[in-house]
Structure formats: structure tokens, C-alpha cells
Length: 573
Picture (cartoon, rainbow, N blue to C red):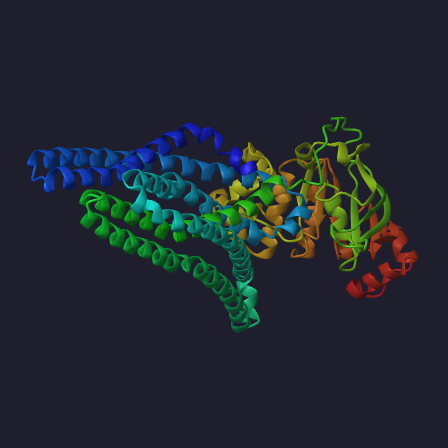
């Protein structure tokens, strides 16, 4: 199991913690024997020396157990906290390597729950195991054995009660594990609703959908509550059952002990010792329902975390790199490519073929759902084609190293995504060691330089989550600057100038021409497409027209319709 392998670095720490816990356990098991000696050899015989002797021993070993418990807590905390750190690190590393299809399989809300709540469950379980949980079953076992040594007849009652209760607890644990797995799934759903609401709070208020979203959250929250209550009730029923049988055992021991004391077959100290063992075992059993709950949740969390750690990525990195020959830098060949999203049976792209030469600007037009963005996602290998292949500079992208391939591509998605931090830090996503000169050049090309210079802190201006303190056009231009600063071989602009006015967009595209890169731009604007070296028209995942503006305006009915809707009467020559 993957998770267990992460415990290996802490084996010595865990052994020390367990050894200290065993010292506490040994003291707890020996104390009833010493108490019996105090009663039989001291109190009954009125021997003060034996009372002081055995009392002193009890005091000394109790102090030893106290110190062992304190040190055990430090070691248990060290092992559990570091284990939790390692699990989160491995999970994050694994998630970073996920293909887009795996992100569809594991929603963001579920991944967040697994990396927080599920990891915390394992972390807490390890600490409790090293501190308390392992001691309880050993206390039951040790208590039964020592009680039998003290007096077989009186302790015989244990043999009728303890084994059935242990089997009952094991059954309860298996049942609870299934229930708590459902609880974690409901928690995923609650987190999903919360995440959507927080991300779309502006839209919710704009459409006055607060009450509807409140009802949706309440429904998910109620389902979580119901499953949690059911699971907790199941585990809590163990306590009264355990206490009933153990209390009956105490009554039986006291009744039999009273008879044997009167007959002279057993001493008072032996009866007190066995009653003490019954009390300790009862206390251990009473903790079992809590331990069962902790371990049941841990079993459910372990299953969920292992699902992430052992899942196989269907996409694998190649081992080749592109050449540095500037004469062919940025050539894109799309050869008979078809693509459908995982777990669907309809192609969103069908038999597309085209070539973009180095330094060209290619515009891609088409209605919503025509496959434009899907095509873009195949070039940096967010997905692989279902059929056909894509080559960059003559090399199949599937043979290239992931990181090397994506470093050659500047990708600006439809939704401008900025991160919490300064403008400088966001630009550095494109190039970590970018100089101020490079940042200035990129921001000037993206037509965002003047805006930044007007800000009080300029490039050190702090951006909110997703760049909330910038307008849509400013976010788009900053995203483009971030892509340009890496000086990409290929630049993909996925409708990322939609919020710009025509004048600003024209300046931006003119500035991009000065970068030595092949540019593919998805656009709905004829004014943008006109300036491209080549235009492709997509419809239902197929190329239905290609060429320059002058050719398409004559031969393509769809292009004429788009032109007419945006600019008026189409050109005829």
C-alpha cells in the first residue's frame, strides 16, 4: 500500500513511541498486583512497613509512567505530523501530474477534501495509535492474562465475555468504515457547492439567486448531517452494550469473590486486584467505540487517498526535445486529427489537417462548440488526439517531454487566470528569472504597461484572487504579457482579446508580430481575422473553409455571414 511506504522514515520514532507506551501499559497492569499486596500483606496484617514498601513502589512506577507518557506524546506527534506532511506532499505532486481527464474523474472539491480532511484523519489516527489506541487492546489482553494468574476461578468470567465483545467490535468497525466513506463523499459534495458559490458570488447576486443557492447548500449540508449522525449512532451503540456486559462481569466477580472469601479460598487482595482488572478492561472497552470511529474514518480516508496515489495516468511524457534550429522553429502540422473527450462517444474534432508555418499568424473562427478550444488543448498535450497526430517542427508532440514542450508554448486561455500575489510575481510565471527590462517589453507589447505605471506600487501592486481588482481587459492583457515574457516558439490565444477594443487589439497584434513565434488565435472578430496570414473556419469539429480574408469573403458563405453581421455589407472583390 502506497501510504504505508510513507511511514518508513519514521519507523525508529514509532518504535520508541510504542516502547514508551508499553512502559505505561506495564505500570497500569502491575498496579492491581501491588494493591493486592498492600491489602493482604499490609492492611490485613497491620504491617505498616509493607504498606510503605509497596506504596513507595507504586508511587515510583507511576512517576515513571508519567514521564514515559510525556515523552511518548512528543514522539507520537513528531511521527504523525511529519507523516501528514509527507502524504500531502505526495498527493500534491501526484495531482500536479494529472491529465485533464483525471481532473474530470476527481473534481476539485473532492481533491481539496482528500488533501485536508482525509489527511487530517490519518494524521490524527497515527497519533492516537501511538498514544492510546494500541494500549487499549493490549490492556484487555494483559488484564485477562494477569487476572487468570491471580485467580483462575474468579477470572474465568472474562473468557465468556471478552472474546464475543472483541468479535462484535471488529464487526462494528467494518460496518462503520463503509458509513464513514459515505460521510466523506457527502463532505465532497458540500465542499463542491461551497466552492461554486464562492467562485460565482457576483453572478449569484446579479441574478438574485441567493435563496436558490442557499437551498442547494442546505440540501447538501442536510445529507452530510444525516449520514454523519447515522454513522455516529452506529458506533455509539457499542458503549452501552460493552458496559452492560462488563458490569455484569463485575457483579459476577464480586458475588463469587464474596463466597470464596467466606470459605477461605481467596484473599481480599486478590478479589480487589481482579475487580481492578475488570474496571481497567471496562475502561478500555468504553474507549473502543471512540477508537472504532477514528479507525473507521481512517480506513475510509486511506481508501480515498490511495485512489489518488495509485491511479495511473493514461498520458505519459516523452523523452525527446525540440531542436534549436530557428529556420523551422514553431512549425505546427495537424495531421488528420480527431478527438473526443474521455467517457464520451461523440467526436468534437473530426479529421482536421492543416499546417502553420514558422512566424505565421493563423486565425481560427467558428461558432460555440465547433471545437476551437478543444483543438488548442491538443497542442500542449492537455489531451491526446483520439486519431491522427500533431507535430511541432516535425516531431510528434507525444514523443516530447511534457515540461520541455510546454515551455515552448505561450498559452492564454479563454478565462484570464491570475494568482494571488504581485503583478511581478504573476509575470514571473512566464519566466522565473525575468529581468525588469523583459517585463517592461512584454507589458508594452501586451498594451498593459501604461496601466501598470499608473498604479501606486506599479509592478509590486498586490492582486486579489483571480485578479479580482483588475478589469476583464486588464486581466487579459496581463495574461498575454505573462505568455510573451517566456518568448515562446508558439503562442496560443484562445479568444483572449475579446474584452479589448479594436484599437488596443490592433496595437497588441502588431506588437506580437515582433516576437519570433507562430501565433494561433481563436477569435470571433473579423477585424482580427483580416490581419492573419491564414484563416480556418470550423464547424461541428471540421474545417469547412481556409485561406486569406480576400479568398474567404468571396468563396465562403459562412464567412460572408459573419462579416455581414459585424461590419455590414460584405466585400465582393
